[in-house]
Image 1 (cartoon, helix red, strand yellow):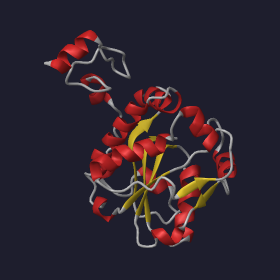
Image 2 (cartoon, one colour):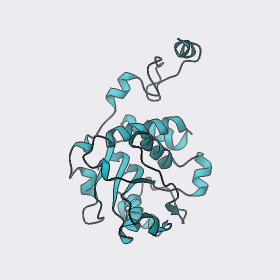
Image 3 (spheres, one colour):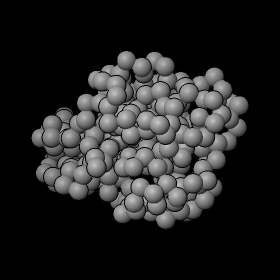
Image 4 (spheres, one colour):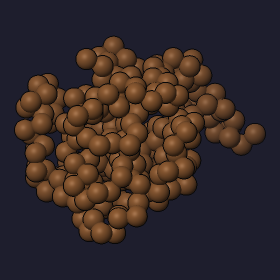
Length: 226
């Protein structure tokens, strides 16, 4: 009753369409939730995200929860997550990722979660690292520890938006450092990113685990099809 009255006095709106949410809805209305562009990658191996890294990374498993495109609902949500200080929305979308990951046949292999890091300057501007908040949401569902400081961003790079695949790779070469790899020697890391386009950023991080002989898998909120 109190929750219903609270929503009546201070209505919450859908982060996608802007319609008023009912007291049983959170962040997205039922209609927008149904229309989320789910990939279904959790149900099969050799999905497009896994194939993206063939010959590039020795990744154990890989998936993305949703498709990303200029016309996609995910574009608006990702923009809010990265630039509108939507901490609670980010955590909520992480929980959705966690529920998708829980459907995989390999989730029990995962022992820890590591978010792709951003620079301190970018984190200060946004107020948080979106991949770390997504990781926290995932952890709330699959009950695995988040090691937010396992990877460190050591080089500030320009935005990857609108860069070609080659320029994206050049932009992130040597941008990351793996802190204390010996502490991860018995782990199976789940590497978390927000959007995978060419996979350059994810690859740069994954190579550090690969060089340290640490098994890892990849999960992103969204995958931008080419």
